View 1: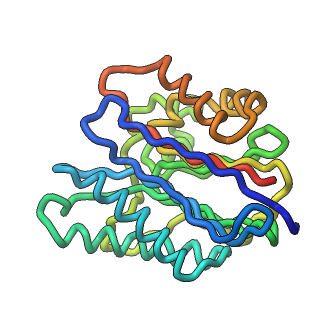
View 2 (view 1 turned 90 degrees about the vertical axis):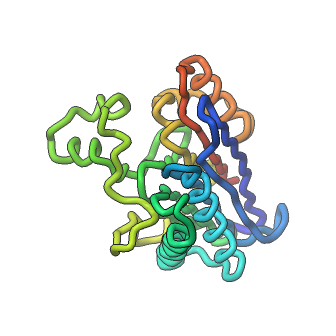
Amino acid sequence: MPGADLLIAMLSRRGGRERNEDACGHWGWGKPGEPGPVCCVLADGAGGHGGGDVASQTAAAAVLEAFAARPACDPARVRELIELANRAVVAGQLSSDATRDMRSTLVVWLCDPVRATAAWGHTGDSRLYCFREGRLLLRTRDHSLAQSMIDAGMADPETLRGNPRRNVLIASLGSLEPFDADVPDDNFPLRCGDAFLACSDGFWERVEEKEMEAALERAANPQAWIEDLEQSIARQAVTGQDNYSALAVWYR
């Protein structure tokens, strides 16, 4: 689709925590009207002694640097980038006692706007949502104990946001053992008006999917969309509010 463009916006807040352990960013080649491959990444770190912020920043930087060196949009490249990020986090664990327990979630979203295709993958409980014609089309599945209990019929899906086991991850970056990230097998064909939202758990736990749809309908651009959703988080603010981050992409 010659002339296709992407509109990208992001925010990342410390919330009520001492430091922000989320990281997000994007890299793209080209200019409006002449776009090239684009990479968006979001990570949410965990680990004592400051290891969480190091883990997320390490993972995000590894993905963006590797993509910039060889921009390509397909599931194989997504897997490569996730594996590179995992190796970078593991290397960071071995470099210091302060970071030896650090881990991170990861969402990688790649797009070729000219060919109108996207590819993505994730590990952990940071999510990617896709909206088409203003309605939720799909979202990633959390790698958490709570989600596994729901899948096994042992818990109600409606209770996921408040489940005490929601933050117990069964997969994340920082593993010496092989792990399977979720990466769809095929490129995703884009349509004009498609909207994507990558976010950490501190964001989605406070915002229901219906709110995401309603805010999307009101928004003039992706920055307005995520700032509208941030207001919902602010209204529910609690002591020790988790970090929250979001990265939104509109395909035009």
